[in-house]
Amino acid sequence: MQVRNRVIRVVGAATLLLTTIAPGAHAIVGGQDDGEAHPNVALIVFYAPDGRFRCSATLVTPTVLVTAAHCTQGTIGKTVVTFQSYIAAAPPSNLPRAIDDLGDGVSQVGYGNGEALGSGVVLGTSYTHPAYSDFTDVKNWNDTGVVVLDTPISGITPSPLAPPNYLAKFAQPTLNKTVFSVVGYGTDVGPAASTGPQKPVPLSFPLNRRQTTSPGQKLTQQILQLNGNPNDIRGGGGTCFGDSGGPVFLNGYLVADTSYGYTSNCRYLGGYQRVDIASVQQWLAGFGVQPSS
Image (cartoon, rainbow, N blue to C red):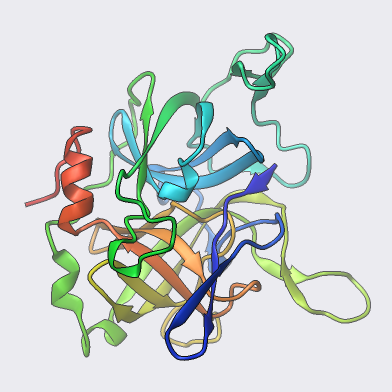
């Protein structure tokens, strides 16, 4: 199972080059296992024309999860959602696969052996922000999507959406002094091998929900940027491949979803799509998602 990821590298002073790195884990770098600290954060698994992928998402109503647009664009069929905190220590992950009963590879979603989806696993339909620019227009990023569940979730309290333009009050110089919480599924970055060069690389397992803290670095009309270096004493780390779509929390509010990173070893800056801005909140309102007052 692959992960949806976006890595942006700065080329020269102002040009941004979008690249996609090889499949791996996109997860919290540093930080700690989340356990049941954020039960409203889910793992989502979906099919696209180029394979099977996973991302993270946040429950904001009993039937709606907020994630990244690049985790919903091009989805084929249903999206699998699980709120289980711990999935697997090593392959196989035992998450549902498509049942190829019509020969199209994705006609249904299930385990393929008659087994029910199981506790904590539900299905939903993905939608992508209509103004998502696919990382081509920094003024109109809109990297937000939603998954609408087939059946409402009970027993999990949805996360409140930030009030309109909530992050504006945390602009510089306050931003550098503000520490945000980030949550997502995957694993830490570690050495590629037990012997030889100990170059840190993203690993695929264990697959579980993790959390950490990151200090603010930059704020634009669309993007919140955080310092994800685990050596920064102001925070615990940052996000990596597979955390895409996962939440950024501040003062109990969902303020952004994980959008991109700047390096392939996830030890630098992370970019997060603001969900407190009008273009996102007006679109979310169409799914019954209202901001806090």
